[in-house]
Image (cartoon, rainbow, N blue to C red; front, side, top):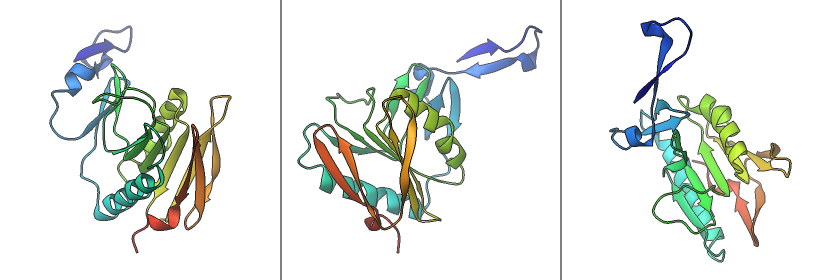
Amino acid sequence: MKFLNKGAVMGALDYQEFYTVEDYKNWAGEWELIFGKAYSMSPSPMVTHQFVSSNIIHELKNKVQECKNCLVLNEIDYQISDETILKPDVLLICKEIDEKVNKTPEIIFEVLSPSTARRDETIKFEIYQKEGVLYYILVNTQERVAKVYKLLEDGRFVKQGDFENESFTFKVNECAIEFDFSTIWRR
């Protein structure tokens, strides 16, 4: 852990804690590290959150069986830099990777929780956009809607629509992944 001086006046309140991947490796519990700042992922997700996440994984795995090099992973560290590690709910990556995800995934799903929704919709939205994630999906279990964003050539996300019971086709490399949103919701 480092301390960064935030102002010209020296004082105890002028310093902000700054963490790196090396610090992160030693933490107990579930955390994300964003630009050197620690964010707790607790409490654990609720039943509906886990149910929807599991269904997203199941639907994706069924649809990408023919896609070469594509892996569906959940709640895994995605290391962007020495100061930023995010833990998406579900991701699809179609690149050769070892045991760590340090390359940009093609698709990321974030299932919104009251404690993390604001971060998912703002900070992580901007980070994923900057990192070149092809599709970013924000899943609201309370409203039963998934907002699908696609990265355009100019490097910005554009909303493709709100999906509840419809299908959407993700185009990833040579694969067309027809995802049926009606399969993910808790009944």
